Length: 164
Image 1 (cartoon, rainbow, N blue to C red):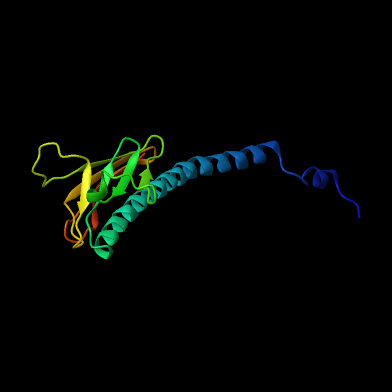
Image 2 (cartoon, rainbow, N blue to C red; image 1 turned 60 degrees about the horizontal axis):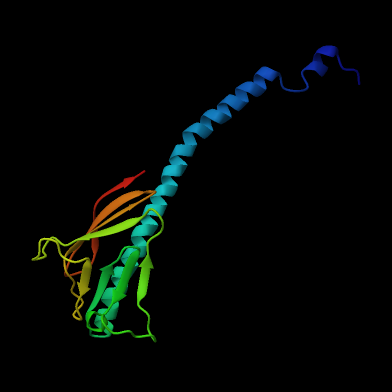
C-alpha cells in the first residue's frame, strides 16, 4: 500500500497540540491540588478530634465501670488520665495513660462554670458518668477546632473549626 507524503506527516501530534494538552493538564492539576490538600487537612483535623474524643469516652467509661472519679489532667506535652485519689502515690504497676501531643499541636481546656477565675487544667469525670462542663480548643498544623462538652451527656458539640 502506498502512502502519500501528506499522510505520513500526520501520523503523530504536532508540538502545538502537545503544548495545549500539557497546558490543560496543568490547569486541571492546579485546580485539583488545593481541594485535595484541603480535604487531607480536614481529615487530619477530624482525626485529632476523634483521638481526643476517644479519651473523653474512655475517662467516662472508666469512671462508670470502676465506680470512681477520673480526671484528664493537662500537662505541657500531653494529657494524662488519672484517678485523683491516687495522684500522689507512685504505683509502678499501672503507669498512667497519656495522650501525647504531636509537635506543633496543642489542646486547651476552659471550664465556663468553674468557681475559680483560673481553674487548674483538669477535667473531672465522676463515677455517676457526669462531668464538668468544658470547652476544648485544639490548634495544629492542619487548623483548629473548638468543642463544647455537655456535663450530662459528655457529648461534644462543635463551636467552630478552621482548616488551614
